[in-house]
Length: 216
Image (cartoon, rainbow, N blue to C red; front, side, top):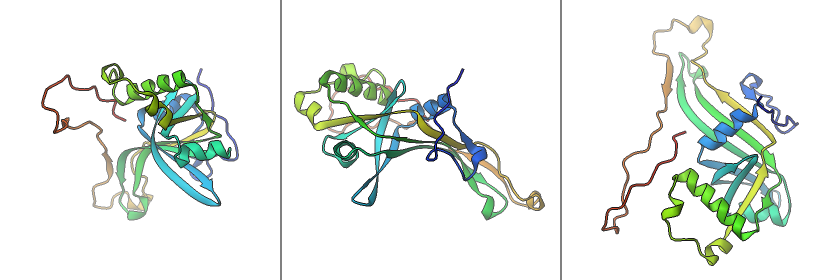
């Protein structure tokens, strides 16, 4: 049985509630499919939004940055609840009027107070989980991380509990009187695939090509 996310004053979707979901499994699928998130936080009354890559293990959502970066260090030095959004664009919805054009998408918004991962072995384990998401099996082929890299990289996490999903996956919804307007209407899907690999120009020897992550 699927679990439900915590519906709070922050996570309750008020605009377009018919597109909201608090199904945890659905949220986890979206988080796993996406490669980037946006971390929102405040400092001295100013809002900052920082894009970064993320990954998940169990009920925890992780991200990383330089150990002194604002989106890692800030909410740890002064504990505060951050807001994180993950979005996937699935297609353009072309209607019969400009007003009813839209997009098909999947998104998750999460809230939580970040927790710093300080244990060295656990940080390295999380590095591997992140690389396995980016390119499965690549970690074992790389030069091992060194002490300086471990120290310079901050890893934080929040528990996936106070969150909500919002999504759209449907054709255009026009005003009934426009349904026979003489123009093409429908969905222009965004096909997701990775292009041809571009080898580093300084590499003068061929090696096995990396595995790409699953397309979102």
